[in-house]
Length: 223
Image 1 (cartoon, helix red, strand yellow):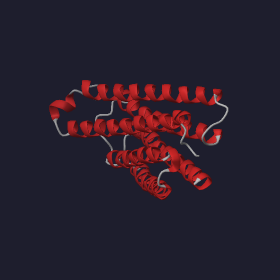
Image 2 (cartoon, rainbow, N blue to C red):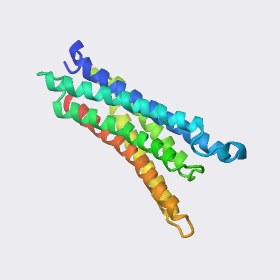
Image 3 (cartoon, one colour):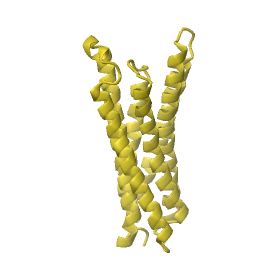
Image 4 (cartoon, rainbow, N blue to C red):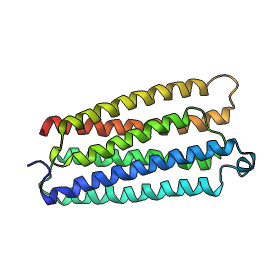
């Protein structure tokens, strides 16, 4: 039966671990954002600049999560290469592993640029967009817990729909953010910095939606 043998759980455990790392990274990024936002209203903290120990520590923590997630993905791919019979299509396993890994890659890219670009003040859309990402990752985590054995396929399909709705919400925030960014009077250097940051934030939510679409296809095929 679908995903019930002990040997099958190797892949499902990897999916859960990847989703857990992605969720932790998104939550850590949101904390990093809120700390920068709070520092903006505290002159003494703001004077420390973006390379304060707290911001750097958060970014380094996200980098560690990304490296741990990479190791999980590499091991899953190794096992896929050496496994003859898999619990779901090999293409599904490969795509789920890759897209889950891409979520945290995009999160890490944001935190890295926050430090490299010396961001002292957040754009107003940054935290709302990150909040949507966190909610998407939380729903991915729930979905990965239900995927083995296709526990509660109705809930799985509902989660996929909710993630898709969150991706649409993120697209709306992203469009407003870019429109505000390109208004006359904004510093050109800040425009370049924030365009890149927003692109990676939006990419992270896109990859969450890609995972949801894959899960939906698996449910419809196997349930």
